[in-house]
Image (cartoon, rainbow, N blue to C red; front, side, top):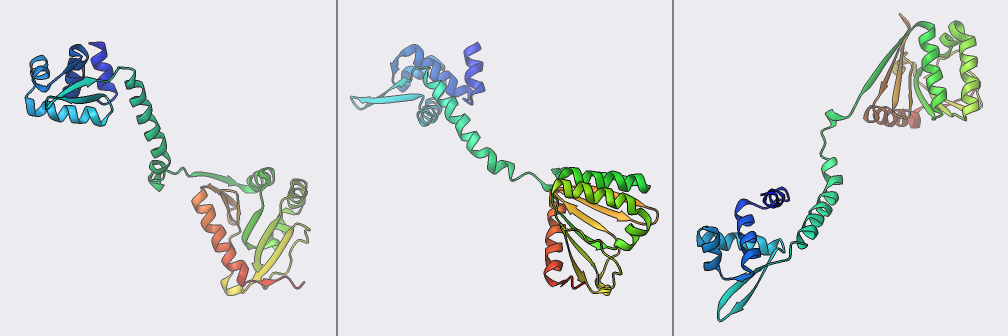
Length: 240
């Protein structure tokens, strides 16, 4: 019957359903009458009645030392379903935290050549987020892409982006930008692979051949930012 399927859908077992429906028909009844109606073993009936009581679907009174059981009005089923829904809603945030980190999405884009560099720099500027950077050798940018860098700086300034950049102590040249702060690390610890981090993206530039790899992943970006902050505290301020 349709209503039996509905009761099953909200989590009642077949035994609980039979006992509940029997009580709806009987009105108020002791266990022996429930047994006659359902053909279920007496011991099992007590078990099903206990479960239905815990769910708020059955009540009882004692008359002459005999328990008389009564099914609660079916409207109570709506409250029962609502309680289950509220319980699940409360559990969802905790369950979400159990998701495996492998399920976190990682997006990777690869750009090639001067146009690829331009595209990646344009993305950074349009994002409008502050940037931190390692391995900065601006002599290369100046000698190879001066016009492109000037365009990028204008976009950065327009978007109000601030940069903090780590370069080598032996760097012969750095751009003088109002919104950029440089610090310097010893040459032996300098990694000549430019790496910029903003938002949840890490941008790595390989010079030969010119290739720009953009990795979008919050966990990775946060890891790079923490490493940057460690180096930043130890690096020397710009005395130029």
